[in-house]
Length: 343
Image 1 (cartoon, one colour):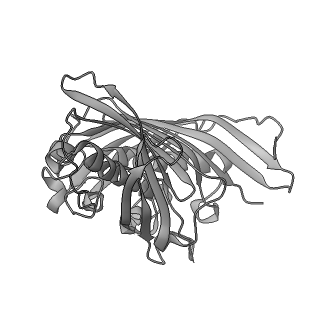
Image 2 (cartoon, rainbow, N blue to C red):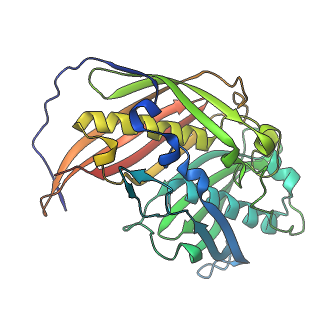
Image 3 (cartoon, rainbow, N blue to C red):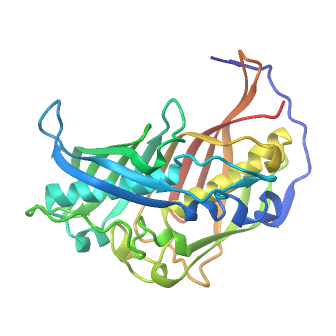
């Protein structure tokens, strides 16, 4: 159980400015929110369709997923961090489970998914991180609700999924069709925004300015895409590509949030502990967003820390808890995080 530490006093400091977020956090190749998240591989396997065992009504899919990371996926100083199931892993697998579920229940085809888009995604962490048995993570999803979309001829399906110890609710806006069951889409295709296309995208966070109180930062973001990600693709939001997406907004928000958190407590990234996600809310206002292209930007972004609290546990450890809030290109992010501070 955590006990709030004594109230903190902030001294006014000079504003910070650097040309690129990597000037502060280090080379993106050595950071999870730089390039590390792109090195994970996801493979749902043996998905079985059925009905909810308790009610017999809600359509479900169950199975396992393999998530693999290279040993050097993220480094702090000279130390390789232990891989664990990440927010991005759960987002990708949550969308893939949603596609498999709706293909079987409503008969949605890949053409239907291409025009579908994510209105809202909420992810919650479990009591402990998922670090073991990443080659056979249990997954399940059920259709828990439907409502009319504001756009004629469309429906918003609510899908609740479990990936390991984490939960994710996906709200997908899609064509209002009902057909015979269709096969689940090929989740690993390179042109799928929530398959493998995120590996062929880059977010350059430039002109970073941190306010004197260290609670807010602004930046200009350039989004680039290449190969299969640089053209319209398949799967959810594939028909709207290349454009700014939920993963872009999330990794930009978390990088700016790291800067703010490290500055708030005077901690370097090399000396910091793992930043644990407690919950994440991603919301999009429209599927029509600015493009990701060689000249994609700059797009303004602002990030801030909310409810930043310093805690002391009964074991004498000091932790920082805060919400990172940001908005980029019509996608808002609120991510509740915590990390242990150096002794």
